[in-house]
Length: 478
Ligand SMILES: Nc1nc2c(c(=O)[nH]1)N[C@H]1C(S)=C(S)[C@@H](COP(=O)(O)O)O[C@H]1N2
Ligand SMILES: [Mo]
Image (cartoon, rainbow, N blue to C red; front, side, top):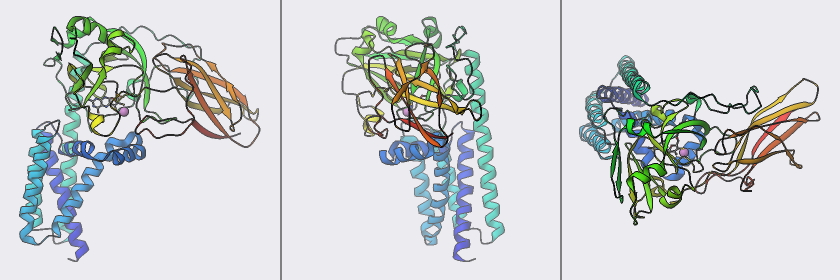
C-alpha cells in the first residue's frame, strides 16, 4: 500500500479506537468524547473559545464533539508515522494521558478514564498491524462507526431515563395562564414565554450531568450562622413563580441566546434569612457538579437590589436537565455566565478570596449586566403591493424593564413603536409597528431604552470582555 493508503488505514484505526473507548465509557454511564471536549473547553485560550462560539453559534456542542473525533483520527494517523518500535510506548502514553485527563479534570470521570485506556489498547494493536488493504481499512472504519453509534444510543437512552425521572419527581409550577399582551399571535414574532424546548442552552459541557433527585441535597455553607442542607422538597415548599428573561453574554444583537420563561424559585433573601450570613461574608459562591463556579456580590442580593432566586422549575415543569436540574441560581439582569451556576451542589457564603471559572479564563470578576436590547423578529409585507410593512420583535432591559423601543429606516430618524403590555419588568416585552416603504432595499434597525433611562448603545462590540453592544440591523426589499 502507498503512503496515502497507510495514512487512511491509520485514520481508520483511530476511528476504531475512538468507538471502542466511547463504548466502554458509555457502558459505565459516561462519555470519553464529552470528557475530552470538556478538557478542551477548560483549557483552550479565551480567543479560541470566543471564535468557536462566534462561528458555531448554537451548534457549539456538536462542533466540539466533531472536533474531538477528528482529533482522535488525526492522532492515530500521526502515531502511524512513527517507527514501529515507538508505537506501543506512544499509544501507552496517549492512553495514560487520556485517563489522567479524565480523572484530573473538574468533573472527574472513571468512565472516561476507562474509555481512554480501552481506546489506547485498541490503538496499539491496530497500529502494530495497520490494515494493509482497502478492505481492512474499511472494516476498521465501519466497526468504529458502529461502536460509536451504539455508544451514542446507550448515552441517549440513559439521558431519556433520567429525563423521565426528573419529570416524575421534580417540582411543578401552578400552571396559571400567561396574560395576553394585546398583540395576539403575529407570525414569526417570539411568544411572551419561550417554549422550554426552544430555550437556548449554553454551558461548558457537551451534555448535561444526570443528578439523582432522591440523593441530591443543596448545602449552604461557609460564613453562615446556620449551615443548611436542603432537599428538593424543602425548596419546593418555599418556591414562588416569576417571569424573567435570561440572556447569554454571547447574545450579540439579533441572535437567539436569550429566552423568556416563567421560573419557579426560592428568593435568595429567604435562604439568607434561614442561614444568616456572618459579617465577613461578602460573596455568594455558587458551585456546581460540573466544577463550574461563579460568585456574586452578597450585599445587593441581601438587600434585594438584585432580585435573585434559587430556581427549581421552568414553565410549569421541573427544571429540565439541560437547564440545570435540580437547581440553579438566577439573578435577572445579570448575564447568564454571571447569574449563578446550573446543577448546583453548594452555595457558599465566602470572603473575596474565591476565584471564579470565568475570571480564571480572562473575563471580568464583577458581574456584567444585561444592557437594553431590541431584536427584530418580523419584517413582512402585510398586503402585497401596498408598501405597508409590519416590523415587530422583542426587547429587554432586566430587571427594571423597557420603557421605549424605536426603529430607524436607512439610518434616518428614530421612530417610536407600539409596545405590548409587560408580563413583568424583568421579562422581555414585544413591540410592533407598521411602516410605509418606497420600493427598493432598506435597512431597518431597532433600539431599546430601559426604565432607568439607559439607551441601547449603537457601537458594535464583541462579547469579550465587557459584554456585547450594537444594533440589530436587517435589510428588506420593498
Ligand atoms: N454549572 C454551570 N452553570 C452554568 C454554565 C455552565 O457552563 N455550567 N453556563 C452559564 C452560562 S454561560 C449561561 S448563558 C447560562 C445558560 O443557561 P441555559 O442553558 O439554561 O440557557 O448558564 C450558566 N450556568
Ligand atoms: Mo453564556
